[in-house]
Length: 209
Image (tube, rainbow, N blue to C red):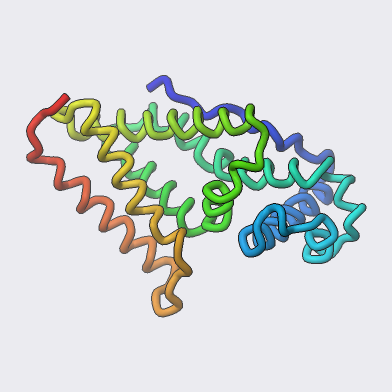
């Protein structure tokens, strides 16, 4: 596999552990506010208040609200980048299991970031938007290549369609609040079982280009 996730564009890091914690607090607060109110409807002062810091104090960690948005989206690629690199060295079924587990983590633990990616991408610079598109393509390449390793009779087109379908299935809970009647751990089990069941249906599919 040659696909790789590009280095993040916004996260320049912080020189101290305290700075990293404060940066994370700001991002957590901003993520929930932007998910709820939208990017244009969220102000720096609101983010600062939610993070327990004065609005101007945020500028010690981020140069602008735009940079905060990019850093929120970078959290998606920070999760997926190592997975894309890792699966190349794994056996076919182990690689597929790793991808499924990572996408479940994305859907359940980074729901807000996913929703912001869908809703607010129009507010990011063109170069970042293009990087997002390239990263998404490389992530899907990794899924399709891994699926073909497990089901070698599939054509490339079928494998890519299967990749989109199974990641869509896993990611669907991100669009709706999780039922409190089901624990997150049980939800993970359900999503994993459904993903494997969906992919098992490819076993007897005839080859198509």
